[in-house]
Image (cartoon, rainbow, N blue to C red; front, top):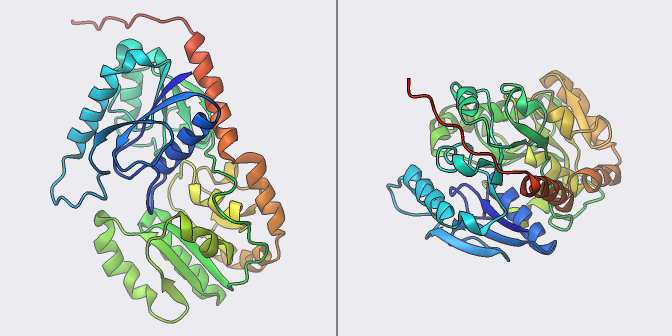
Length: 354
């Protein structure tokens, strides 16, 4: 099939350090190429891919040293370029939420839009009712809850290459790990409290966005004092096997409706169980007592640490291989692409003017 992949432009594809959506798009694109499909990636020029790359920006936005950047303009340019090439594809797969909706309305049936973010935001439901012909994919069933009446085709969980991270049979580092982004909803304060209450060292590998710089400086940095709480900075794929693999467990004490939680399956790939709060997608990703432990609060998380330390890490890795490999994800998407390509075209309805 002739498939276009259209990611956000904020991070490189795949990201050099932190980044979820662009990482998944990168892995999906490579898997589709390996399956023999003709794939074109519309991304910044710093993308690394075996697909045909159509560069729509010199550099991904976060890596661009320019002090002033117009994110909206960059994405509008990207979509205009995709539109110019639209006739060349059987399916165009969008990963950037909803900016493309007005521009591709007449050919909505040849598109697929994966929702990567939270959907409980004001006005989103109205937008997807207005542009209801677009086929949508969720990354967890829980993610759909704010928009149950949207045009959902399927839920496709994320997947990773099985050789991306090394399986570590023993978490011999004697510490808990927190990986991701420092922000209130990611639960970094809870992670620190859990580690301190349990008397177990915590290592934090996390990105600090500009929007959370004050939160980090005023709330989190004072909590990092002492030898048992270590902030190691932002890390990329090359460092995750060691960081996650040597941990007793990954702490995932989120305080928001997490749409998926990629870090949980990154930990699984290393054999490291997660101790995760029962929010959002967590019960769909974690198999209780197999790949992790689902808890209700910080006190329960503290009690779960010795249990996690005794879990069979080979079973954790097997859960990843059974459910969350990139080829499983890619084949699920190919089935959706094929269904869209076979579906008859439907003319866009005329809007009422009065």
